[in-house]
Image (tube, rainbow, N blue to C red; front, side, top):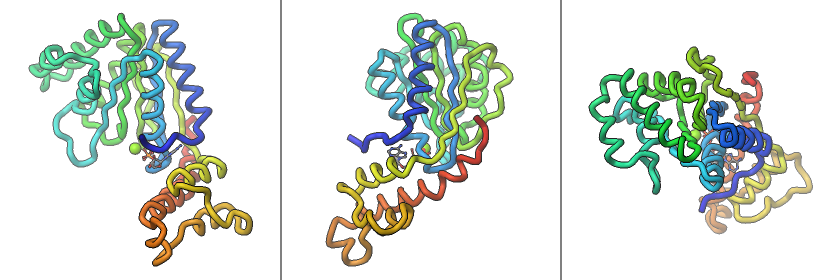
Length: 252
Ligand SMILES: Nc1ncnc2c1ncn2[C@@H]1O[C@H](COP(=O)(O)OP(=O)(O)O)[C@@H](O)[C@H]1O
Ligand SMILES: [Mg+2]
């Protein structure tokens, strides 16, 4: 099992609220998670997906790739047909194949399949790294949330970019969550998760220096499980550097 999610209480609460509302009202929602690389979009999206599955949502998770764009629409199609309990069975998925090069019809078919599915259980679809999504996926993400506004289908789109307001979102419930920095307490907890113990020397220097100095370097690092510690140190420094810029995103 991976490390636990640290912090993000406000974002988790906002998403839990949107999911609950969708489940109760039978209506859809569209949630954007935005922030720069390393800020924690994927970690948060995965935690949300796990929680939603525990709460009875049928969950699909897809991810756009920067370099390996295997097929038009792949991030969405993978979300529909991945994990131990895919949203679509093999036959239904195969039925989408002939529509591969006909985005209008593909999106129309996916909409009716998802509406059928959502009639039985609420659905969560997560698309990660949407900044790299191909044209077909972008078109589908533009059209589907509005089209399915009257069904309990929740979309989570994680992206480095702040998305423009979709022209076809209709009256779907929209949320924009801009990930800012973790608190020092959460960063220390995260460092502890990676290091396998509390940071050392926490009394003297200020937090930023303390976090850097907590990781042994050179021969000392090698002697004491240095590789894992150096990874943690880099992750924490990335969080420190990047959190400021995400806070400036100003797109809430
Ligand atoms: N809130 C958090 N709690 C625990 N680990 C986190 C948290 N945010 C980020 N991380 C860790 O930091 C690293 C970068 O986070 P990631 O979610 O991949 O960022 P992003 O998707 O925004 O590029 C990953 O190893 C991730 O597990
Ligand atoms: Mg990511």
